[in-house]
Image (tube, rainbow, N blue to C red):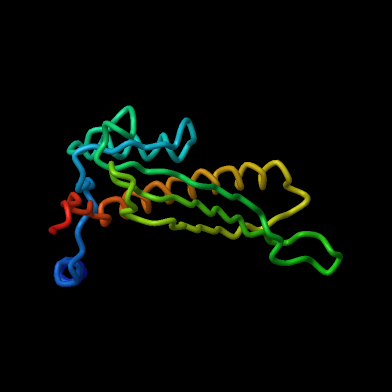
Length: 171
């Protein structure tokens, strides 16, 4: 009887997932032939380049003039904000924030995506008795936020379509 109930439950879950449109993410398919990432040696830039290479269909160009589009990071801000204090005035909880600004331009310098931002945050509890462990937890959360940032940037690159080439105005 229990086996039958488990089987029915599994069939129901599979049926519900197939009906909601769920599918695995898979690889990204960028709408560009080539892209230049001007992110230097940053962790986000390296992750973005790695994801673009993994997508397979888009070539990473060495310079902006060789690329159909260019990804230009314009700023990255990280800060930790105290969210709550204990009764004795010690930090109890912090919020880590990562804000990343970027733009995407085509080979002619026209904005495909004007100045845009991605902002991520994570809350972390804090304890003076476990300073080393909490520091390591914060480092882990920063890395997790960087990975999430790369995934969000890839989704935004996929959604940003290049503009058709400019044509001469008719007289």
